[in-house]
Image (cartoon, rainbow, N blue to C red; front, side, top):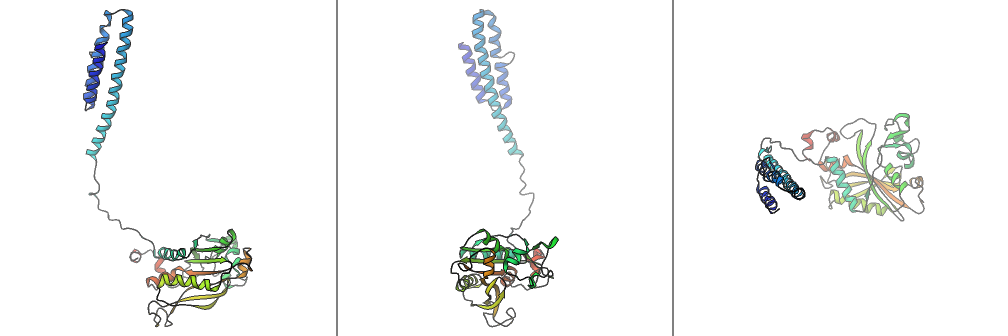
Length: 340
């Protein structure tokens, strides 16, 4: 029994120090092979009694199992190490084989303009909402107080879909209807998005363009609140040193309505080709939400008031980047886009 314990101890030491699968196989042959140490002891059992054979046989089988398990465990470790080492040696470094220089991407100027405008209104407490691009006549016109004979309903201006029940939205204003249907005041929200008009494209017009609709509804909202919010936006976007003004206008969904101008930032109000000699540049349309619009969403127009505004993104981007042709934004000419 002492011999068996010593043999197991020796085998264990050799297994631990084996540094390759081949040397481990040699250890296995030395102890468990046909002429191995454990095998020799098994063959010498003929000199013992039946009871002794049982005890010694059990002891040798246990020793054989112990050595075999240690060999298997060490073999798994050595195999993994050898594979890992082999992979390190055979690893190919492709970094020097190819020299592709991929330029970093960036926002399209329209997307960047939307981000810049949205960030300003977010700082003023406005949240951002989205509306569907396919609308019904009710959301696009009816709920926004467009009379049945309003020119905007003309099929020449609107992309109507099959059956004339649905259409591609002509402005982002329907977004305010969706918001008010699902939320009670107070509301401060902007709705940026793509809109569509059935018209020919030229330097200043496109059948597809972008708008940002703005809406604020609460108790005691006045035109002063409108002027304050939009003046802060204009000064943040165009510069604190520029003056602003509001001119009376007409929109079916607001009353009173106005157009907002900013002092020309090219000539500082002196008059130039960009502002057509007036010293002013129109930047958006706005007004107090019409009471019929509030009624359409079941708001109490005696209790709540609000203001709305709409910004043409392409127009602002053209002013910001000094462009004179809206079509440049959609031609996907990398020579143009790389400038931004």
